[in-house]
Image 1 (cartoon, rainbow, N blue to C red):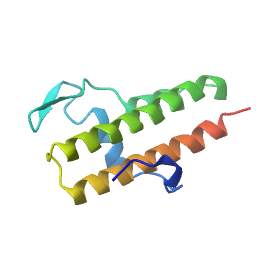
Image 2: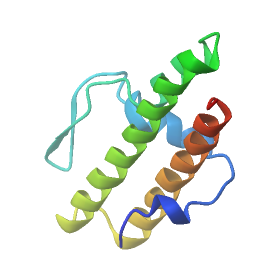
Image 3: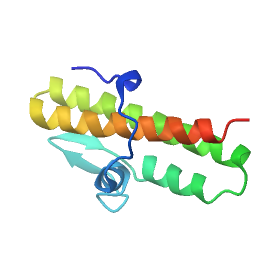
Length: 114
């Protein structure tokens, strides 16, 4: 089971994924299954900051950061699956959401390209 952004669907992600990425624990560090996670921020923050910029040139770097964050989420999900902290069905569902965020960000980056 691998993260494959080239096969990501082209529709928007479900809003709850954006909330889970970094702000679920109120932006604080926490522990998930004995593994330290997050310090807040993440894809949702980068998307919000990008949307709040005035020109495409200002938006693009934020959207690229958000796409990178989604890739990191996928990497962590694969690691949690290998450590048997997540089941296969749950991992597949969450990887699908990460793929969808990458697809959305790729579209926003293209929209901001000259």
